Length: 597
Image 1 (cartoon, helix red, strand yellow):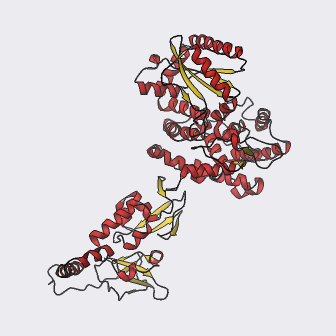
Image 2 (image 1 turned 120 degrees about the horizontal axis):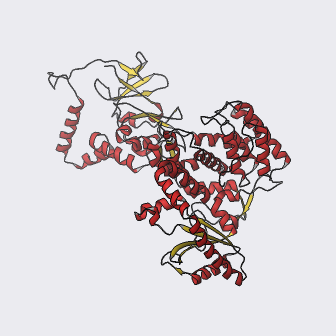
């Protein structure tokens, strides 16, 4: 992926556009071009005269996404997936895509569509890190992440035609989610562009101020940088080292961050210029750093060796800042290979190879995302690389949704009970059932990544000792334990405590608990309990076959629970019934019951 490049062909001429696409990207075989054209024709046929709010044809966005990907020579399936990633908007069947273009394209577009349609808004961007990890949890193929990044990059490049609220949401997501995700993937160019364009829409006044200051000093900057470039090239040539030097002003968001950090206006900043020196070997990098420090005095504490100690995303380079003509000048020195990795990250490894079904990369060419690690095999596939990446990013965590779209992070093996307590303790205490993706699941079933979890509560429900053994999070365990100690005399730890107390005190405590369970009518003598006959609602329904358990003999207004039997309908137990709680099947057979008041 690299900078935006608008097609020169008439946007209303689909055949001219696809022809220009292939002229700009010449690495496809004839057979692959034919398959891509088939996907393009399907897109055109479904789009017909459909246009976006900006007035541009609907098919231009998918083509630009495909072009962004093709600049890194991504494979045929990636390009087809980019062209068809809006298939749902156009009414194209996913099964048809699978039949026409294969399983790989089918999987990519399904996952990319799910990620791109997550219910994100500005209120949830505080969860940005969890959301980024959710993307990895949802993706089994690195190309999914690359397509989602390309989609969002094209959208943020073309925000000017949308209303302010939409611009704000996309721009905030750009800097909070997509720029860090690009950085995590080692894609510095895309990160910088996401940040600059986000600043343009979130703080347009500052963006225009920075742009004006940078433009005003362009002539002065050009001469200053030209002098520095000539000095380095002259010394390098004398040592027989062939180099390439790129001069640039720092990107706007980086300048904005310096303004905030130092509490200065943009015209008060001087270290806005940078040189990038590209050479052929790491040894030349270290020789050139000596050359630079011989030419100009380095600033104390500003030398960084990311070649010997790479960044977590695999980035390698030497950084230094020197005083050149009484102005700070930042200089980066790296090899061409390091530069390719720094600019495009993991995308730089998806190199097309003719005549192969899969792309293979050598171990020593691989920049490990999030953490450098040793890989045992000499050759690995990008798919295997991405699985390693996912495992490192996610660790022993899963990420699930609330029905509103919030992301909840839980440990592996966590259940719906853990989820409920993560939302709020009061919800956890009243849970009687749960749904995952709309289907009822047992409360003891471990949740899976990316599920949408909904909990069902009952105001008469309460924690049980059995739940204490199901939960994985410390919060859920602590809350359940505290409730049981305070409210449940049948809790094993309470019984153990009572056994240690004097017999008289135990007897008195038991008598008090029995009196608490008896709740007579006002005015009734406590020695003459009043029995009120009430009907029971089963899951809100009347006249459902049920019987009252003889082990605990529930009476109104005792808290009650329902247990689904095989032959006798619903059996009604008191909520604190030991027989009920010792039943290993209760979590899967409990049903919502209550007195019909």
